Image (cartoon, rainbow, N blue to C red; front, side, top):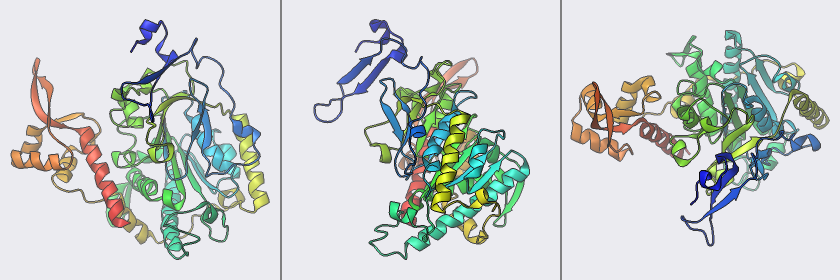
Length: 457
């Protein structure tokens, strides 16, 4: 296959797609070459400006690819992580994801802005729960609202179990259920901008008789909502301008379904947003040009977008404040007409009373599952280094855990962490040693979370 240099074009002008389906073959690809930079022109305004109302069950118009094909983003049944360095269009992209929910009068919004300012203030007039700010009081309020929502998810599962099979064929929400005001289970989107503000707060908390930090508690609550919320109609959208290994804990990152990475600093940060080793598969958001505002790599949830689609480069629609305010104003008018306006938008800012013990029990049964040995001991030993290191020598783990090396290697291999050899520094030179990739360790954790979901269901 010819390289971009052989075609005398920049990489951004060359689109390579594998030919799939009938007549497809691993060695056959489709090449599309643009005459000029496809992302150089002005961004398009969102098509939602031209619609009166939207259905949250429909994928939201998100942007266009280099070939000017419209790319829609599904939200129901999944979750979304948006990551970028500052001033690359992160807030605009997050607004686009939220706008389809805003224009559905039967949908509900929880909007938490850790940055403050006016980026999200227009949503205050329609949001069921709204918090703007990064002070301790704001973070505690967000925590209380998330506890409320975890209890709501538990309640929804309990109520769906009592519905007959015609109304609820499975233990999942349906469009009919979500629009039945009497049932009280609307599609609910949790939008959190600058999520690192809430996840990294060091204030000490007492939760279920154990001491933790407020940030860790928020992470546990969000992990539960991302894992259990989609089938109950709860969608979580997280955005951060600090997509590094210390921002979003691996237990939360591992269960986020859809990802969108605008320009980031390096390939490690790109992988934090898009997933492990995505750069080796040709998707690296650190290679995006600074001039390409709003251009990012979208990795939609495979279950909603189709298994054949891994990722694509998308230029998001433009969503400035004036358009965002217009969409939010329309969203309020629609809710007033439908009689669905509630919560913060009508002055009710007090979280509903919940069974805190049941919430803590749910978190303990889900977010903090017991990992099998020796994986649990390895994770405990590495601590924060799980997200900071790429490779850990087996000899180091054997010595630290005081285990027999042959049995340890076999047991880790059975958990999906098969040892391999890599070069590590040794004085002024390097030496080749056996060890395991931390990416494999994180994947093993994700597998255990998935297995726990199956057992609980």
